[in-house]
Length: 352
Ligand code: UDP
Image (cartoon, rainbow, N blue to C red; front, side):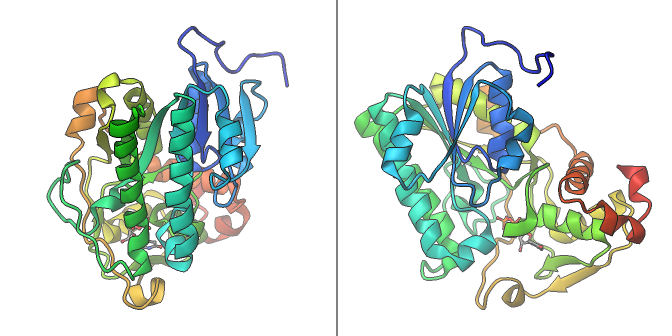
């Protein structure tokens, strides 16, 4: 390391913070943010979907400690939480594709793993931010999903619903531990968070389509493409998570953190092609083929962000165009797409 300090020194408000899933997409951005605020950060990650590479920029920081292990191992969780005063719990089996393919693993990690983290936090009197998901609302297509909106889930025997089921149980566990055992816990529900370091490997649409546009491959839009989402930028979401965790009024409460703009997946594909000046075409793929027979998608998912806005001033700032460019630049740099992509679409050099 050169002698130039990259991170600010520890200040008096600094915490010793455990981030489970800290080597994942959102987790690694959170870790960088906490280090910049002066925290000592312990990352517990099994590196199943996360990667040590996500933390490469912080690897030399003496205030970062990395533990390779699973939240299913109570001893490991206890050790990781040793002398921590707060936990951001992000470790989970994520990605619709992965959940559909491996429902048992998802259920175990997302239910048993989370309870391990919550009970260890109680023992050590650490506060918890439980990171949950907009999937808990299921098929509710309301104009604006509020935190107290109804959940509409499909057949529990369809593995697609096990993620929403498990995350709902996690939230119920957190609330019950809060009410009955005094756990200091707040919950955030993330809505399609996107940005650099998210991988398309587990089915997430944004990096998938950007990667396809860069390669000049067809953009795979599932179903009729008229399903909508509100993508939120990780740069907007992470600081809000930290402010919510710190706010005593958030105890026992859940907060939506989503994007401001509703867009169909078909329009997203067009916008990616336009922004990256790609020659790719769009290919509609039936759900049965993309996932599994009988797969049910969410037709629409729109957050009401008022509660987080009132509490911590959360307001999504980053435009979709900016995120497309950031994700494309990151994919080119990280996955060495450049050599494949350039002959197919030489103008990328101009837009990135
Ligand atoms: N999707 C798509 N093409 C892909 C991956 C996903 O059209 O290559 C669709 C998917 O069916 C869903 C939307 O994009 O309608 C968002 O999918 P993602 O898995 O990113 O998030 P979630 O379903 O959890 O909102």
